[in-house]
Image (tube, rainbow, N blue to C red):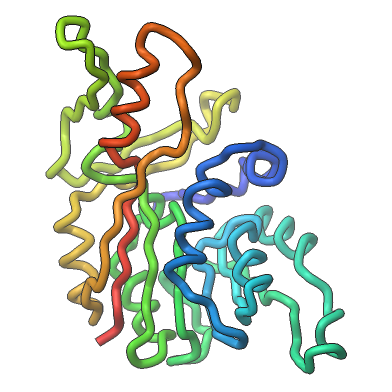
Length: 262
């Protein structure tokens, strides 16, 4: 039986986080790096897999791509549709500027034609999806030859839910990252968001890097690029600020995997 990992119950909170809060990782770190890597050309077809409320889909569309978004949470898709660009560009540019959204799990998307996308992007999502191998198989099916899949993850080597944390060594005067478990694959209940009902939980699936590499290879992908992204944030003045900022520069929070269909 599949576990319920939808973020639908947190749709309103997540939308407000992305739209109203300043300095988020999504806005300041992840999106600029994705735009750099994707090198979007007008008319390029991009699938935003586990698109949430459409934050990244709208940015890709604005850059010139023809975008489709898929998410299992109907609540998030409803918000995304409400923010979707209109058809205004159809008359001026001769193309349909709307983003097509679908409510669906990521491991079975029969409404998408084979070999119909140039790029697939999945941001902070595969770590919350149980059936990773079938997701990658679907990505292979809908990607065109030599198309690429871009996965953004919480770094699995340094961010293991409930088994990693920051610490401070008073003797050395350094901030460090403590990791208690890594190689074991884990499914870990986590609270939806700060301030939520403690009973409202979803699951995070921790996997070591080798699990991602093996699953991608089995689905017909070759890893073409790996990037590790550190935090852009700065500490407020205080006795540990220098050590905290140094640790942020040295210990990445996010991992980008670009996998090419072969």
